[in-house]
Length: 176
Image 1 (cartoon, rainbow, N blue to C red):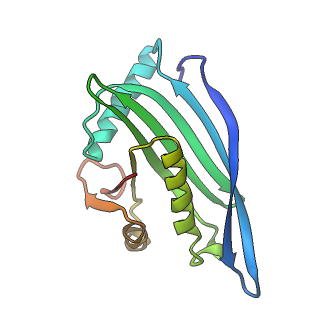
Image 2 (cartoon, rainbow, N blue to C red):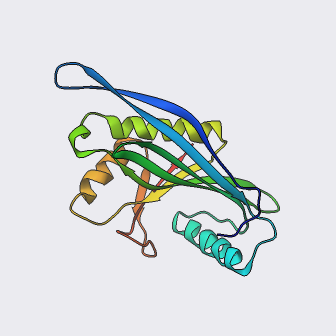
């Protein structure tokens, strides 16, 4: 993407998650990385990205028409991570800030310890700190789809089957 030169990359902060280990409490530290772009002086490639992103938001039943900025956020510690895209839309009458969960992965040996739910809580806090209106995403279609649906339902997301979605057709949305 060739957005304006006003891009940035920084380490925002570190988030700590405690969980019950085999014999004692353990802790992992997720580091937050952020980078972003303001959509000014768009090239034709950037304008295509703008159109695709606006179209993607229709999957989540969001009526937006003009992308004005984008950021990526990454929380990572070893094999446990979350990748997020944050989009800023501005129309004549409204501003909407949407966070798209690209993926969340908890290391296999750490699963079933509540770490995924704690990552969702961290994502929600980051979104509140950055005035995000909605958290959205789409679930991958594999043998763990039912598990994922239960996970997001348990964490307060609404979900529905959407025909134009790219992966499983199941989308998630949560108002922040």
